[in-house]
Length: 66
Image 1 (tube, one colour):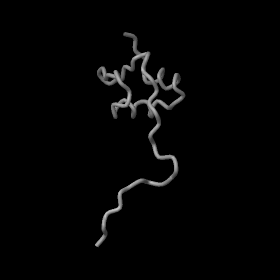
Image 2: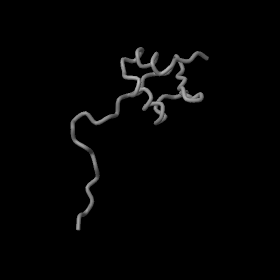
Image 3: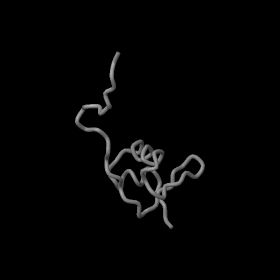
């Protein structure tokens, strides 16, 4: 199996290196493995859907305030 680095994956998907690193840390890229201090991402890995909040509203369940 062939692997790409964080930088190569970021260029391929049009994302920042930091964003790809965050996706690896949160297990959002299947097959991504950490080798020492480097991430190895499979060549055939699909770009995960962006699930960040873009509306500017933070979604939080409201509890009863006393």
